Amino acid sequence: MPREKRSLAVVFPFTSIVGQERMRRGLVLNAVNPRIGGILIRGERGTAKSTAARALAALLPEVQVVAGCRFGCDPDRPTTWCTECRERSGADEVLPVEMRRTSFVDLPVSATEDRVVGTLDIEAAIQRGERRFEPGVLASANRGLLYIDEVNLLDDHVVDLLLDSAALGMNIVEREGISFAHPARYILVGTMNPEEGDLRPQLLDRFALCVDMRGIRNPNARMEILERTVQFERDPGGFYASWEPKEHDLSGDIASARDVLGDVTYTQRDLFTIAGLTGEMQVDGHRADIVILKAAIAHAAFNRRTYITDEDILVAAELALPHRLKRQPFQDT
Ligand SMILES: [Zn+2]
Image 1: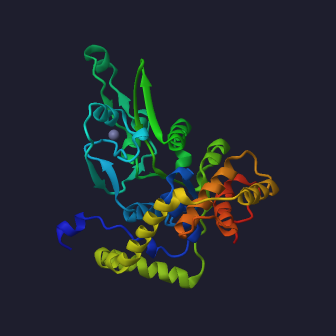
Image 2: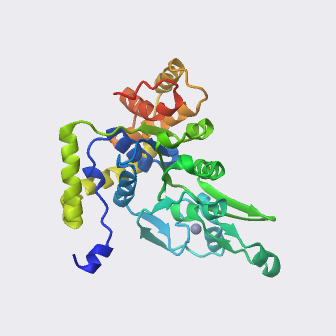
Image 3: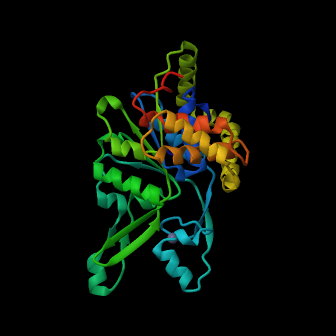
């Protein structure tokens, strides 16, 4: 294979992943609305967890960003702008825009707090009155996908920070009376192998959605996986090209869903259905109810509807409840 071709990393197409519907659905719903609050994928090794996350980022539509902004601020949302964009626009500059691909950021398990949130140069501030901010992982992840492999092995404090900023949609660093803020809205995907230790229950509950992956036992499906894997390894470009129309369609569907998301309505009856479900299943706290509503809205938008149905609610519940129940009623379905 020519050298330049090899350097162009071709990603395994998301739409060619065999089975694992629930995981794919959970990822897509988070892509439609990253504010759902992320997804935790639990499963043994070799169940396509990282392949799926990487593949999702690769197919997502390009987004409009403020040109020259280190954080990829959204030109249409001035309230979320970083400190630098606020200053630029305050100086009466009309901020230029450009298109950018969705980034895929792989968080190393050894990541420290500074590496994640970034650092303020206090010396420069005190001695020269300059505010210098060295961006961290959250800056690269803004409007992209943040992938945390083996989240259960990460420092608890760092996981806390990640979940905090994901919920807030902002990263705010403060030191010695100086502060710097930038948007940190990203699709959060964590994975873990339960055999290698558990996640604290408090952290578990803060992942909006969760799927438990099973290895695929069906011989036909396994054969399909084998075939596609070999085809991809032999000719990544050719394999990708044969799936490109499907990838393009899904990307378009996600973009349309993002556009109608704000128009999706729900009724008192829908809320009652959700509350009835979580009440009956004895789910503690109210996070599950909110997550189910958000995910149901995203599912409706993805299906080009502006109202939610009981099916949307059920689909959302099977993603929002597995890690919040002591017994796991969805595991075998
Ligand atoms: Zn900015």
